[in-house]
Length: 255
Image (cartoon, rainbow, N blue to C red; front, top):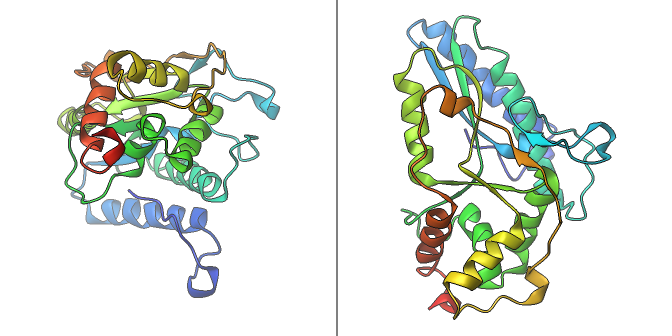
């Protein structure tokens, strides 16, 4: 379920996007329960709700997994209002929908990493794809989005669109699957993404301002999907290469 990115309190019954997002998932969950025929609700969440920041934001935990929840007072040098509000909304909404699990319905929440891939039906570049290739396209605004994610999560979880689709189908086809699952096949520093592009696409020039090494060692600790039997088909190299090829449709600097 999408979280509203824009909100005007003067024309809405809700005071902010977080309240609107919570009301939306609550309405859907309760409608499913009332219907009596819906066995499982699969919610598309975001890893922005799963920050491994420690209490008081004094540093990062050693690993990022399903036990992590983003604090509402997180600090980041990329504290852009709509990023912060989106993060807050996704965190509140995911907690709300998971509260219905086992109460007349099963709920499976898939918290997606930054999504890339080789194609899109949209006539514009999706923001997730734009952020993933922002260093290669020299896009300062979208690079801020990439760095926001890195400062929030320690590194950047990425996932291929085809694996996202397969994970949703997997949750639908396996009745025992419920609860919270992080959905990403790779966990990289933004500098590692830049280095990959520089190594494999040498004609692409990335300015030094788009290459920042955080020197963090946070590890990806989520194995719940794999332990349930799911298998990833796309590694980071395929995700990044496919994303760059897709971005060429929208960005002349890559051609």
